[in-house]
Image (tube, rainbow, N blue to C red):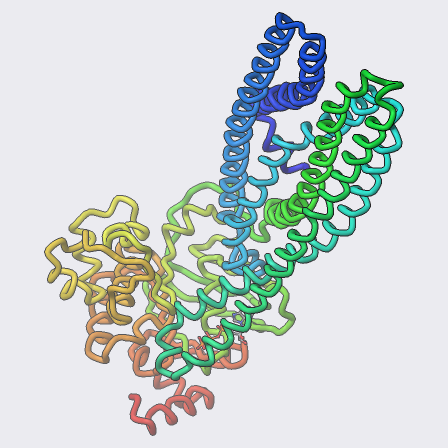
Length: 572
Ligand SMILES: Nc1ncnc2c1ncn2[C@@H]1O[C@H](COP(=O)(O)OP(=O)(O)OP(=O)(O)O)[C@@H](O)[C@H]1O
């Protein structure tokens, strides 16, 4: 609730308008039966003047109620949209401050749901609060009192009806709440299944899994249909049940009034407004119950959003650190690391020094810690123990902007954003021009295919970069990495989709064009780093060798084994 309060503050004026409008609307609908009663009296007394006068008042009241209703809806919609937009922006900003660790803790997909679906639920909750929270109690209490005032001797009918409807609604809405929760879960699951299936459509088709996938999806879909139908049944029995209670109350009222009409002739007029109040009480309990059921969903979403907003980023930068031009030196001093929420050590006591301008290879078996080691250099994670020093500055004291402009990390999986090639390359250098693009593309061996497009670097990158091959994506991603001429360039198995000739050309271009740059190349194949100044050999999170290819063949059994295996397979 605290989040709603905080986010509502800027819109307090609009909220007041909306609440005043809803109060006017509720009072108008409570007043209508009383006026109707006056009209009836005037008709019975054959007083034409009064009939016309009360008739006009009734009309005016209806119009006031209508206008107030429209004003309430306009302001409620405006406020709920604005609050939802603010919450979404705050969530987004918060997520931007998250470390890799924070994002993994929630998972990217879950964060997207919390920014979209959960915010929509909260928007509906706010809308409901502004439309019904004030209206329902006014209607209920007002109609209850007015019913008792209108026909005091039938007080017991009012009480009995309220108790019965209240008890029935308790049972029904409690059941309904459970089903709504289940429906939400099943909708989430259906969305995930459909998304996974469509994203992995190539795998599904190549492994001939269409039937299995369809069955899996159909099972889920059938369960959703079943729960939805059950809710439909509940609704279909609920309404007649409530109506039965209300109409029995109305029938009983008419019966008792009719029986004593001679003794109490005025009750004949009062019965019209009395029954209207009974219907208003019924309506208030119904809407109140529905609101409570839907609101519980909104509060669950609100809590999920709160979890994001309350998360403290587990990696922050020293705001007072001065912006400096970092050199390409890198040192690891007794660095150990394990991933958040994972006790297994991914790096164990790793120490080495790299001098600016060196080309360093990192090799080792799958899962030996190569990527983990590299990720600590641009400070995607902080080491659990030890220090990482870049350009002579401990990363705990580094200025964020200085580090970002010094280190460029080309990821194992090439990810491009939808837009243009130029927009993607500009992520590596904000003010890059066509000359920079061309140079970077030539280094990455991308110029060849980019220059074939009529619109060159303005060529469109479609969603999930589906209009590029794996190798083209890797080349563009390398181009993005080199366009800003970084001091340190990390290539994490980034040439795996390139043929041997292109890979060699990229390396030659890097040597020639980025002379002063420290290049760290993580490679599966030793042939990719055989000419590096030095190679780091990783094994189960430990640094077990460091030196040139020839040194390591003599000094590192792990390296020699990898080399011999790859040579035997003809990978060299
Ligand atoms: N995000 C993560 N959360 C938890 N554990 C992780 C995470 N990423 C990697 N690991 C674990 O850390 C260890 C080292 O992984 P890393 O990705 O650094 O290996 P790698 O040598 O780069 O492997 P590959 O050559 O297959 O890319 C592995 O045991 C892996 O399971």
